[in-house]
Amino acid sequence: MKKKSISLFLIIFVCLSSCSSEPSKKDIALEIQVKDNQENSNSLTKNDTLDHPFLIVTKDMYPSLREKANIEPWKSLKTDAISRANANSTSLNTSSLQKYVGAVALAYILDQDKSNSYAIKVRDAILNRYALVEIEESSSWGKVVAPMGSFFSAILALDIVYESLSIEDIIECEQVIENQISKVNREGSWKTIRYGTHGTWDLYKGIRSGPDDKYYEAFKNFDLLNWSDLHKYSYALINSFEFYENSLYRLMKRYVEICRDVQNEFLKKIKNNKEQ
Image (cartoon, rainbow, N blue to C red; front, side):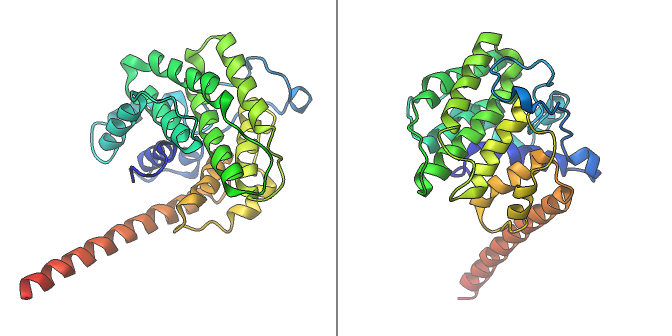
């Protein structure tokens, strides 16, 4: 799993924590309390009406997540996140950036004593690296899915470290993200990543406060065997779709089934080798 984007680690970390007992739909779904402020959608000012973080986690979840990080499988996710977050990299590759900024955001939550330094790392990644990413309207997977998926993670990371940054830092980071993702149209090829990234930005800015109807239709075709479809799942999660709880259950159930299948095949091979 370490080959996957660390931003997905953050999502899975939170989801697995939520699944450790039998939570209700209210406990699982993140309640998004934002104002519908369409008239000020282009305002690049620090929005004090929103209580950050709220997209993928809320601050009251931090103690539980830190406690979980003392045992497996969460412990390994924490170790990996801190390692990635402290690696020196200046790459503008969107995949590398996505892994990095997601790792830093998770480290910010779990490595509490160094949270301020991780917040600065997120800020610097957005201002010094994401600002230089070449992004444009295209029908190419590499020019749409890769960069927009990376900016999706940057939005989540900024939401998480929000309260540790100054007003000036927040405004600068928001301006970079808004300017960059606006270069890719909301409609076009690879529509789900377009909906997901633009929609998440709308939620972050308080422009949207509820589920995205267009995305609902795309999410119904979610493929549990396709890891790239986790972008669909991620955006659905922060939109609190009604079928979210059932989808999460299906995802985790399928994951367990796959692990069991692999284990059974492994045990069969051992048995066969012994018999030979």
